Image (cartoon, rainbow, N blue to C red; front, side, top):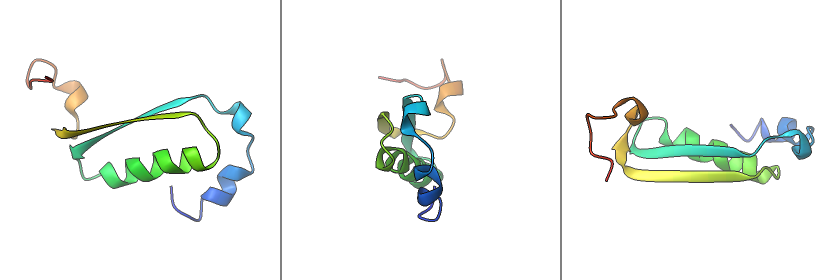
Length: 70
């Protein structure tokens, strides 16, 4: 999301949006974009759970059994 897209998002009723969970991790080149996306959803009134894990890397969902999640 960019500041340009916020007015476009505001045209839609947030009652139509499902709640969202946005997961960002510390070692991810897309972390800042994920943070901005979560903030954009909150700005238009969506219900957002933003989960940040500073010790994980991009793609950790697919690394079950490879890395320790504790």
